[in-house]
Image (cartoon, rainbow, N blue to C red; front, side, top):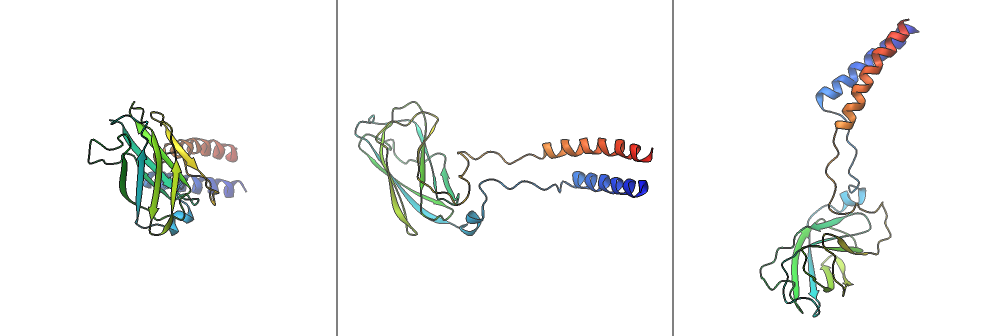
Length: 195
């Protein structure tokens, strides 16, 4: 019995060592990667119409970002909307942005992000695409600086998507530490089994 146990621990130790050295450790799937996301992968076009309130300043220098998606976790994320004019997001203006991203089911959440200290006040945001019904969100209030501000009307089929921006990819450092600790424990167990 002691030899069987010893053989098992030696085999396990070398298998783990080989996995560590080859870099073939399993990685946890990102939270935003769901079956719904895989099924809807592809490129779809979206039109985002942003109307700025007449109570807003004449012009702003802040950068504006958007994040929207569906109840399956499919997301369209644009951290900085590209503007062609200094009059973008100006008082009483309507700005139209054409975005391309993964295909979604019906849009049910939308967030704006403002990077800058201007007191910009969006009035409405309208999202349309040939494949979904047009969605309209009413703001009529100032967007806080460096904060995602918006609406989430989803009844999720999966867990809600993580807050934007997405976290960096998981590191294998934690896996390696655990495996190094296991490599230390195995010789101790082997010596106990031999005694």
